[in-house]
Image (cartoon, rainbow, N blue to C red; front, side, top):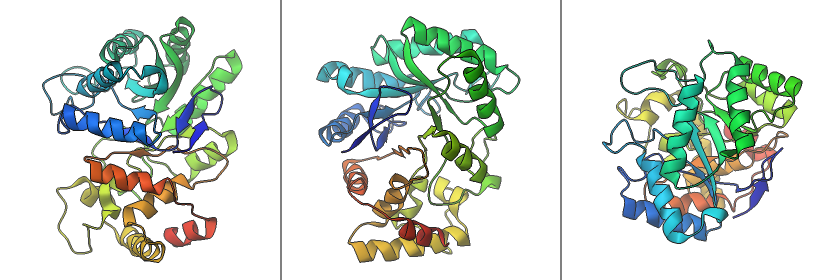
Length: 323
């Protein structure tokens, strides 16, 4: 698998990022190790996790990070892997939902270092933003930890464009690193925003894309495969309101895109999922895109890896969009 260097870093990351939200929980440790081995053997090195992944359904806290930490220790490959994890995680129990105070960030960071069995985290995301907190306070804490060596670079996840701009302007004024990547919801499918029950989730839009294009800021989109909407198991008229794909993506615009995806898949002898992911990998707007994939089994991982071999030109991408 090809690798690219994240702008303003010395990090070389595989073009596909392996999402690990269910590792150690719904995806057992044994199966998680199998997926990690397959991904690594294919040349993948960019892992995406979070301190709170699976905490909503699993009694062992931090199980995704702990699974990755155990795997890296057993394989002795920590120096080969690029780990991106998230802190300042929203509270899933009692207490304030948003947690961007200094103590919150430092506490989460120390727990992640312990879970991952490492001395430093390559890319440390803030999982959410708290607009009531000054960006100066937030970035000063992250820069301090970068100088201490606890993290190498830092990034943001689910930050609105105005707050992202404010943070980057502060970094420019003060000479600190600033965010080197931005993680948002983005795929070929348009999101039904009125069904987003969590108002703190941020999806890519025209203005944010233009900001990335102008600044060259790296994008690491989650839900890059639209939660399986392009897998072939969804169709017009189905009642799938209980699924994430059904709630977030069922619309005539997206079903029209699914039709065009299927047509290109037939023409190229690929799966529909391959085409939808190749669309994300082929983004060339002046900034790099590292889509996060979320396979639940080896078959899904194998299918996603094939997308890294597909090239898509601008005309094909416009056709998929319906432009």
